[in-house]
Image 1 (cartoon, rainbow, N blue to C red):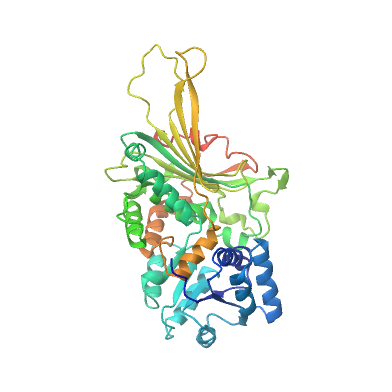
Image 2: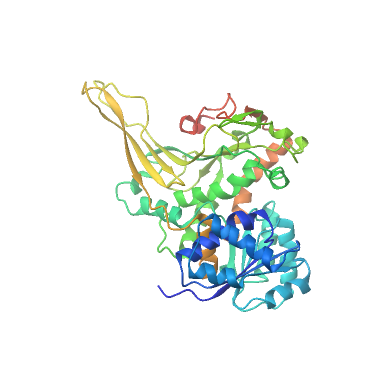
Length: 466
């Protein structure tokens, strides 16, 4: 593989939490992993920072992951900070003039500020091969996502727009695709002929963690399901791409999303809840509505479940439950594929009433296949056996992989514009039903598995019977 060309990473909103906690540590690990890579790092924000203060922040972020090596040293030596108002055309022109190489502009900013900055960029002649990187959410609904896409395409072509979804890193995507399409045994089983249901779960023990300014206007549905979990689902259910090039992978993901609809077209099959006071891992938490910065009148959910169906030949009739929530009893990132029961079991066998299941855990990436087999002792008794395997964990953290793709012009991990629109289209009926009060807002104690009236765990959920 040839050495990557020198590039410039221009972080807009560089004095904020995202840059310090995720972006710059990710960059540090990328530079440590690729010692020949040369990246000019420019930070920009509204805060007054001297060069010394900025370099101290960058070094602290790099050190947090133990990033060392010649590429790390070179970037740290030449990095600089420029105070600027990114909604002002003249300030943006000044930032672009400071870039020595084709710049990648990373918008570590609130969506409304990002859109204003893009409106000004559309009036500027940009350096050749400029690329844009944006954090979710991409718009606030289907219409605004389309409007934002139109604006972005007046600045750079789609191939140089990176809508970041760090949840699916390169190793995770390749692990899922490898499991599905490199195994003659597994691939034919993943269809409505053999699959009873699918569940995609992201349960967190973390609570609000001082993110009320964003989260209280988003909630679990928009923050996780509308973006991250729908992307996971698309990779899981899509047809095999001809190649692993960005255009082929994104085409197949988009076809899956276009075929996705709410189960029975009924938003009342969804659920929502928010946490009340409780304790998680020995840490006491107040009720969500009493957290700093929260407006209880908004009725923001901290736990959401949505059931969808992919209406194509492979998956029609299979309920796919997506669930995500905060302040729960355990930390779970997993996909659970539950298979249908055998058509006939000889009556002499004393069988367990448990279906075969394929579990795919994300971060750490591993899988287990749960099967019914003859166990020790009475040969007529069927016991449970689990086959386990670890996937390749990858060499970089999620944001290291994201930045690698952005700087190398590889959009495989980025969300394409039409996919962002489909995400809003899929959840729009749910958002409307929740706003009208059609679906009640339940409560659950922090540190529990969710409301008592809900299934106790994703593996036991039966969305098809809703």
